Image (cartoon, rainbow, N blue to C red):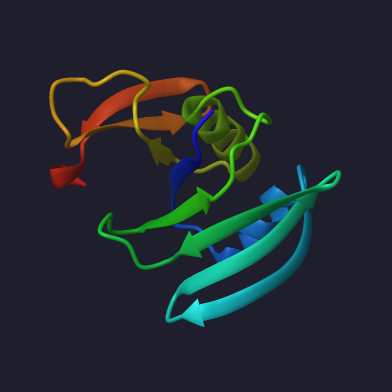
Length: 121
């Protein structure tokens, strides 16, 4: 499994940490650049660095990048579903298969999924 990156709509860093606590022990939060945070997380004996960026190209979305291979979720879509369900927010991630355009991403709200053109978000 590759690393996972999702984008969560209209979310604060504290809300993201609340969600992460459902799965990990969050050791620390460090703002290393304006709007970019490094979270040190652990699951059992595994260290999982998580990078959160509140300033992304996707307006109103915050990036959450798990910089480690995880077996917690079998895919980015499953991670997006888990985040959306817990946070009651829309979550964007890459679709599992290429959809003919690099601008098409998958928008997940609960169990619903829809391809969207990121140039129109």
